[in-house]
Length: 190
Image (cartoon, rainbow, N blue to C red; front, side, top):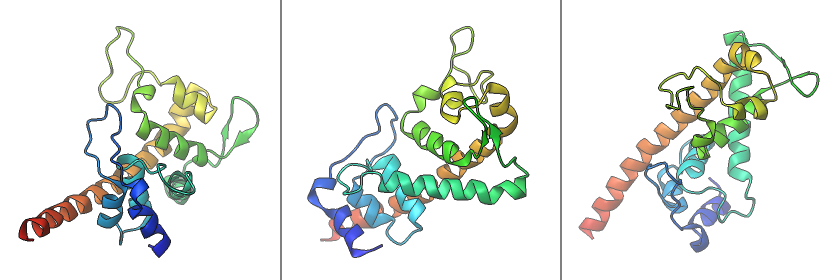
């Protein structure tokens, strides 16, 4: 972490708590997340800042954290492509075949911030549990593919990207809990 990043993380204007609406998840300030995850890989810190600390609030380059996450998720998908034997390109609904990991990374970040937009109710109006029978039109529109292409070619790569992101969050939350416990203990001893 550079000194500039640390100053930005601890600046007074960026220390406001941010709650992800309707998520019920714990939240921390940008400064707390930065201090707890300072020595971890950049994608773990970026995931913590994006999901729990309102990463775009108070940064000079408001797209810095989402951009880092998109790049890391896309690179992960491309690295997994040959191992998992995923296709290189998919047919888009609005034109020729194209790469898809940048779109999948963007969708993963949008779903992280607004998960309710990606849930499609069953025909009886109930919300599905587990893998839904229908695919949300948001996935299809954002990836610019048809339902068959999503099911056959993009579902597994997308699931791998989401799982990777969730792994980054799990590591970050673990460090955050440890840091919070030690921080509270230091305050209690003072």
